[in-house]
Image 1 (cartoon, each protein chain N blue to C red):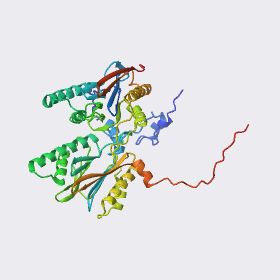
Image 2: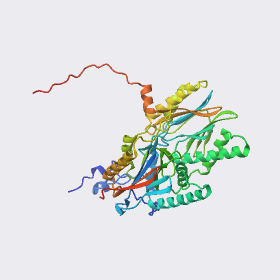
Image 3: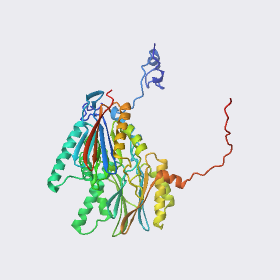
Image 4: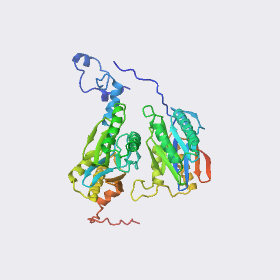
Length: 273
Length: 223
């Protein structure tokens, strides 16, 4: 029985080969192959390209009353949800917070390391380290490991002598000072809500609700974000956790189920004798 | 010119599943005893559980050679701790030591999927779950290894505890009694054995509570 290889035949005839050769004998079926030098790693890289990057949603912004920091709590390994209760807001010290996006172990380890360095600075200099200084310490470490595969996308938020401070630091070696950041695969959705609702002079409750909504909307649309939306506030006396709400419950709080009018009631059919 | 690919891998996967459940005043740590390589079974009687300290028990699945090296490293560090502090390491302390040990090999990882179970300083059960490079989290229950994707949804269904991130905080330990938890673990392994080829033969269950440590074995399907 001759196998049906019609599925394997290329749509286009071989480039440059004249027609006789192609029609003279049945061309062996082939898949289209990319013209890369290193075929095997090309395949792997192609798959990596479409993988969702840094499955998470974290955000932070500066406003009149300090810094608001919020994050989801989902950790995914490919398509498997490995945890719904990951702490993505890391308490570096009582007045500084770091957010976690990217590799969980990388973020956890280097934030703990940063906490140690900040404490050593306090002991050596008899004063707290600034947010600028702390973010620089972390950025320099990550820069020295550049290219080795660390995956860290973090925001350092704190309150020091100059007031509220917010820096974005990543494993490519980037360090940016700013007033509004969102990091992770859910960040486009969070930015949409955050940017449209942001005002500098909000109260702490208004800012917390804005942060919570932004995380909720990101978890709604992004499959790699979910779990519990945590919101922290950093003020002159340090950070304080304001809320931790399950995003499933937030959904029904924001969009309660309305009983709809029944148009046609189904009558009970009585079974015949 | 295609690059020469390495045809030797330093890693192998010996399979198996590990589970741990934290209770109000106990902790149950369990693992199957099958050690495989590829489609072959190397032995039906290999313990994946090791006692690191009085109140900390580690169950690991993955590459058993790396796991053996990891256990030796942790045992050595624990001995040094005992010499320096004149006491046993607590479970949360051992949890952080394990995380740091795993991360120090960030660029050539231990192929180990760990679950650490024990009693914390207040006598309550605690379970810590890890990834291969050291990210860890305290949870109420966890499963790792080849059967974890089969076991975790079942444990979620039976034991789903409120997230420790919720505010106001809610307790994460399961309200089950010790005997009910052991029964649940046995059920879980029987189910995992049905559908995971790398899990089976026997399940070893270690129960830690205020009285000390207890060990139970149960036969599983050998096919």
